[in-house]
Length: 401
Image (tube, rainbow, N blue to C red):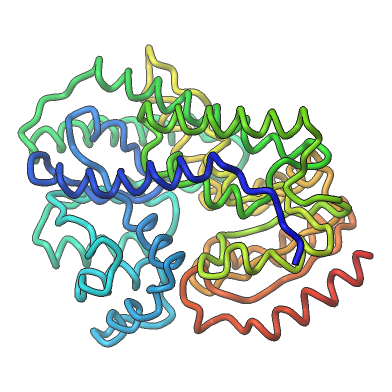
């Protein structure tokens, strides 16, 4: 079988993430712990010495380590529907049966922060967590953004909630607000996000020095620990390695002939294995819409941070209207000069998946891109038929030829 060059920087990223979970578990004995959703303003909590943990990121870890199905079954046995998000079921199952979970589960939270800009599931998920642990929950309500720019009154509304979050966290944790520390963390977040943007843009080179599964493997720091010096360091290392590949003419897929765009969350339990038939055919996935969500945030104004944070919170991809989403996907397809698109119709993530047929039609109208739609689930392998997927992939590759 062909060999493909592996990015050595991914080893450093994996090590940093392992240390992140281990250290947080140890530090949880000394500092308050907050579970947060992926669209939450974590710099506010971290500035007050609150440790933040992402159950969604942990769900992806469960999927990648192929223990999600067993944990989902534990949650289903407790009454949670199989139609719920597999991140939620995996995490809830890890609480009920930590012995079967990576790292024996996450440390117990002292408070919860749920942001409504990603999906409705997290609202009920966090209500269930608040009930289970008997801890306070703050719901940050972010208005739906019906256009490329948020309305001024909506920005003001979110700013007022961010101010309330600061006061609430002070009251719940009895820790004081530290504006200087807050700005230091925001500066690190700005740097991390810019590096992530630079890394993703490397896919515009021909051949592309990285493939989308590499992006999925590398995305954890920008999601879970973007306000840290470690994130800046590992992403600078990855960027340097990619720049060297470009200088040396090394592609992630040797003999790259076809360039594709991936839409939706990764199939974590099949990450590199899923992409192997494409790679063997000289196909490289040079960009995607999911990891792009962490590359679009505008730099936070360190002198007046809350308004720009509010705009960023509203501009999360699945908090945008259909036309704006289609424009984002079409822009990625044009900038990265792709030849087609593969859409993961993800059973778990309804907000990401339900609009795919309309986005597909819009992009096809603008660019005439051939598209393959595959049904699967990001963590629950019971929803994935590998044999059927291989047949459809083979037919799609034949069509691209």
